[in-house]
Image (cartoon, rainbow, N blue to C red):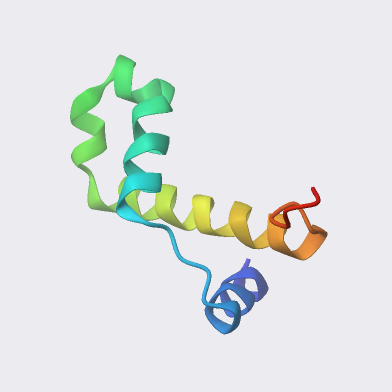
Length: 67
């Protein structure tokens, strides 16, 4: 995971606030326990997970217009 973080930083891959809000809203936890989404550790983990997914998508070419 450290490698994905380094690649994301080098490639300037970020998670916008809109992307983050959409993903959080679709998380099952949002319906089960909305209070849990106030935990900064959980929110940081979700943001990191989204960034890692975007990084992997870029590495395998899923972020290209042809994908």
